[in-house]
Each structure stands twice: as C-alpha cells, then as structure tokens.
Image (cartoon, rainbow, N blue to C red):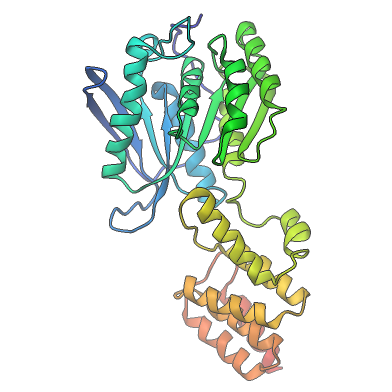
Length: 379
C-alpha cells in the first residue's frame, strides 16, 4: 500500500529564519543509470576553510521531508542543544516505487531498490564527503516507504549510519523479526528512533507496534532505542512531532548541562567539577566523532559547582579554559576575576573584572555585571 500518495500540507510547529541558502543540484548516477535532484543545506556561517566537521543528515523523500528536518536542525542548533548539521535531501516523488523496491521473498532490496541502496552509499555520500566538511556521524531520516528502506543499512557489517529516524514506516513483512535478530549484535553506538500515532494508517501501525515490541526488550548498551506513539496525530502530522524528539534523543549526550545533570552528576562526581567538564567533552568527541566548543552554559555550571565545593583549583582551571575558548569575550575576564576573588586576591580580581570592560559581552555576562563586581570590590 501507499506506493503512491498525493502531496499534502505539513503543518510545521514553528517558523525560523534560515540564514544559509539551500543548494539545489541534479546528481548524475552510474548506479541508478540516471539522476536525482538533491538539496543541500549548510550550517549558518559555514566556512569550508575551517576544520570544523559537521554531522551529515541524509533525508529520503526530500521533496517534502527535507524542509521539516532543516527547520528543526537549524532551530535546535541555534540554541546549542544539537550541533550544526549538513542536511542533504534526495527528491524521489517520481521514483519512490523503484527506489524502495524489495523482494517479497527476502524483504531486502533487489533490482532498482538495490541500485538505489548502492547509490546512497557508494556515490552520494562520498560526493558530499569530498565537497563538504562532514564528520563520520551520519543520520538517516525517512517516512513511510523510505523509513522502511533506511533499515537495510543497519544490516551491513559496518553500518553506513549511526542514527536512524523512522517516521511511520511501511515495513517489509519480516523486518520486526530481522531487526530483533540484528539489534543485539550491534557493536558501535547506534541510535534508532521509531514513531507512530493514534490516527496512523491502521495496517502500518500494527507492524510498527510489532517492531516496537521486538526492540524494546533488547539488552545492548550500544543500541539506543526510543519509540513514540503520538496522540492527536496522523500519518502525516506525526512528522512534525517526531523529528525534534528524534534529534533530542540522538544528541542527548551532546546537550549542555541541565539542572538534573548538575544535581545528580556534576555535584556527585568523584573527581573535581573541572574534571567532570573535561570528561563530558572528551566523551562527546569520542561518541560523535567531532569536537564541541565548551559552551557558556557549562562554564557557569562548573563554576557554580566549584564554588559550592570550595574547589579553588577547579575554578582556576576553568578560568584558564574560559580565556582560551573566548579570548575576545568578557567571559574569560569574569571567571578569572571569580577565581581570584574566591582565592582571596581581591586586587587581581578587581584588575580582571576591569580588563573585561573592553571586551565583548556574552549571553550571560554584560558590562553592567562587571561594573557591579568592580563597585562591590572597591567598597
């Protein structure tokens, strides 16, 4: 079913200005003996000369699914909840039956479906890697037939993607059984997101619930699974609900320190608060394959924990890190002044706060804040 469906209006949850321009281009392929139109969205302020690497998000059914994914990645990365991403959509409105074709006997792609499978892995992704600053952390997003199709990459000895977003998939009959066999064997951190809705297509939902039942009991530390069954949503509107939930799960380890993490992990950590911060960012690089710049939110959290624990050395290390990460901002001067103040060296604290007046304000530290500290110390 649903080999063909009409265009629909997707009600997007928010509107957000996109600074980077979408690149539209035809992609000629030997594997599929033809071409596919692709869309490429680069992050804000993307600079090919910098060494920054970005996660790559491949969106099938790009005719209608690309824009919701782009909107969500741009919005969440703006607030530093997820990293900036490079999003590539593949338009398939006229070719989806061929592109997603699989054999009834094996439930795996054959003929045109096998060609399209190789097109993604052997042509499109290498092309993007050769021309843009992408990391090895790849995410696949699909809806309906394309959501079923991205499953096939997880069965490779070395899966092409690290994260799979399946929005109301039209599953091949044996996929729940095959996935239940495959998931326990995965040996690298893999995210798997599955979504349906109370008003989803009945036949699809039955199979989706069977897949959820097969996966929710999997005991594998490398297989990170989340399932959502949305209320008051249907086969189409669940897309707008599922994408942000999926991104939230995929980048759960990337997020800035929350109040919960602060109370339960930072304050309870056996080492110093600064050591916790370093481990968090080392784990992010190890887990996702790219470095993350220390965000101001996390500096604030570690400074607070250091003061709470009377850990002067941790505060000293934090002030040094702040100056390195934000040399042109008031941030470094503020935390250096905080360290000297806690250490009892009020003269140096005053000098540090005063030096920050000539630098740029940040999201949390302003000229008025520094002036308040200066007046306080002078009094």
